[in-house]
Amino acid sequence: MSFEILGTGSAHPACRKTNDDIAQLVDTSDEWIRSRTGIESRYVCTTETLQDLALEAAQKALKMAKVQPKELDLILVATIRGDCITPSAACILQNALGASCPAFDLNAACSGFLYALDTADGWFCRNRAKKVLVVAAETMSRLLNYQDRTTCPLFGDGAGAVVLGQGDALLSIHLTAKGDPLTLRIDNTDGQSPFLKMDHPAEQYLHMSGQNTYRFAVSNLCRQLKLAAQEAGIDLKDLDWVLPHQANLRIIEGAQHRLPIPTEKYCINIQNWGNTSAAAVPILMDEFCRKGTFKPGDLLGLVVFGGGLTTGSAILRWTIDPKKIFDSEVSK
Ligand code: UT7
Image (cartoon, helix red, strand yellow):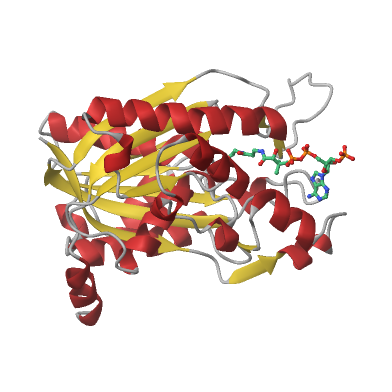
């Protein structure tokens, strides 16, 4: 027994920044960002916390799933950085929802949502859970150096959530990690210890070798999706939809050239969000679910990559009837 998806949700901060807004801060242009990445705008937190985004996404997913917080057996939050080091974002969310189940965070950078689905799968397989809430939430704007034009235009803030129930919709899931401390790195802060003897206090900014990440991304999007399909016993051509990590439109196009899947089957929303790290795929899933794109029985291929370096891929059978989404909205 594994799981099926019962509901999805997403959330973003109110403030939307266009490429022109970013060009007021660093030496860049709308033309450069658009043509090199496909990004047109991204959301950034002003007064919102990660907790606010996670809670809104979770409540929408619970509403669609018609599941009460008290029914949850586990809450997982995938994030690079919660609002606190402790308590975890998952514990803060559990309290805000009024749930009473175990709750913890996990960090696999942009691959966190797939790592969380795999962890949830284990709880279903061990018969420890009947209902699980998985949230991926990121406030990347708090981790960027807005004087570094090579990174600050790329990322945005947001949260995506799914509610899982017992089922057989997960056909395969495949994770990898290739420990690499340099290619994509964000140092933690050092605190105020009087005993520390560091030459340079760490700055909590994202540093990335864009081209190394790019090469890793294109080859792994293809390899990991093929592996997940193989493990599910399906052909890539059988996929109805591909939900790739939203890091750069050119990375997705690179994969499109190499894989035998028609381009119209790729779900894309990077233009409006930028790269929201772990939240990218659940946000994408919620958007296309609510548009009525996915039909029950459709096969979805999820594939992500990110800091670590990590990857994740999965094949899922879609189970939510679009008509029921509108019913749950009407019953608000
Ligand atoms: O989820 C985390 C995973 N992250 C990723 O997947 C990111 C993967 N990498 C990428 O998406 C791309 O490598 C970038 C978008 C980061 C960079 O694009 P690129 O086409 O690889 O550019 P580049 O690094 O080769 O830089 C080309 C030029 C350089 O100038 P010179 O040396 O040729 O004069 C950069 O300084 O573009 C310059 N540049 C910029 N110019 C204007 C870099 N960033 C900018 C900018 N605006 N924002």
